[in-house]
Length: 462
Image 1: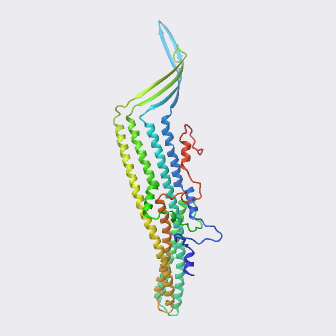
Image 2: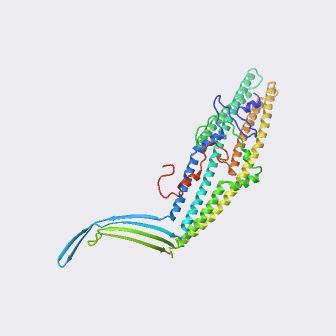
C-alpha cells in the first residue's frame, strides 16, 4: 500500500491541510462537524440552562418598572362583639357583628429616582446576561468542535496502532522463519515478541481513549458519534494578522461586553443606594365600607385621599454603608473589564501561535512520514540480505507509526486551534458559522415580558 493510500484511509488534508477524516462505512452518510455543532446548539444542557437563566433575568425589568405603577390592595374583616351596659338599675345587653371592607390605592410620586435607577440597572443586567449567553454558546460550540476532532483523532490513532500491530506481527513471523533456518538468533525473536506485546498494549490504550472521547462527545453534543467526516476549514474567518485578531477580540468578545454591562449595572446600583437618603412622596386613596359597627349605626362609608411625605434623617448608618459598598463593587466591576481584556489578548496570541505551530508541524510530519516510509522499505530490504538487524527493522516501523501519529495529532491541533482562535475574536456562534439551526433570539422573550402588568404563565405557556 502506498503512503498516500495508507494515510488517506483515515486522514484527508483539505485545501488548507487542516482536517482529519475517518473511513466511512459503505452506504452510510457521514456526520459533519457543522451538523454536530448544530446538535450541540440545540441539545447541550449547559447552553439550554443559560438560556433559561437569561429568560429569568429578563423578569428583572418588569419588576423594576412596577415601581412606576400604582399598588392596589383590598381588605376585609368580620368579628363578633358582645356588650352589657347598666344605667339607673337597668341592664342592657347588645350583640354586634362588625364587618368592613376597604380598598387602598397607593402611587409613588418621588422616591429619589430609585425606580429609574432600578430599571436602568435591570436593563443593563439583561444586556449583560445576553452576552453571557453568547459566551456560553461559544464555549459549547468550541467544546463540540474539540470533542468531534478528538473522536476523529482517536479513530485515526486506533487504526494506526492496528496497522502497526499487524506489521510487527508480520515482522515476528518473518523473524521466526529466519530463526528456524539459523539466519538470526533467539535474541532477535525475543525483540520482535516484545515489540508485538507493546503494540498490543498500544491498541488497547487507543481503544480506551476512543471510548473516553466518545463519552465526552455524547456529553457535549447529546448524541452518540456516528461516521464522522472531515470538517470544513474556517480559517478564512481569521483576521490576516495577530494584531487585528487581538483588536477584533477586544471589540467583540462577549466576556468583555458582559463585563462592561456589569459596570453599568454597578453604577446604577450606586444611584439606587443613594436614593435611600432621598425623601419619599406618595399619594394614597382609600375607600371603606363598614356594617354594624355600633348599636347606633347600621352602616358607614368613607373615602379619603392623602399625600404622604417621608424624609429619612438617620437610619442607623446602614444606608451610608450600602453606598460605600456599592462604590467598591463598581470599582471591582471596572477592574474585571481589564481582567477580561488581558485574558482575551493572551488567549488570542496563544491560539494564533498554536495555529501557526500546527501548520509547521503538519509540514514536518508529512515530510517525516514520507522519509520514514522510504527508510522502512530500505531497512527491510537490507535486513533480508543480512545488512540490517531485526532491531533496525523494528525501530524503523516504530518511527513510521510515530510519524503518522504525529501527523494525525498536528492536523487535529490545527483545526482545534482555528476554532479556538475564532472563539477568542467573538465569532464562534451559530450565525457566523451559518449552522442550519433555528437561531435562539433572546430579545423575543424580553419583549414578551417587559411590559406585562399581570399573569403567572411564562410566554411558552408554563
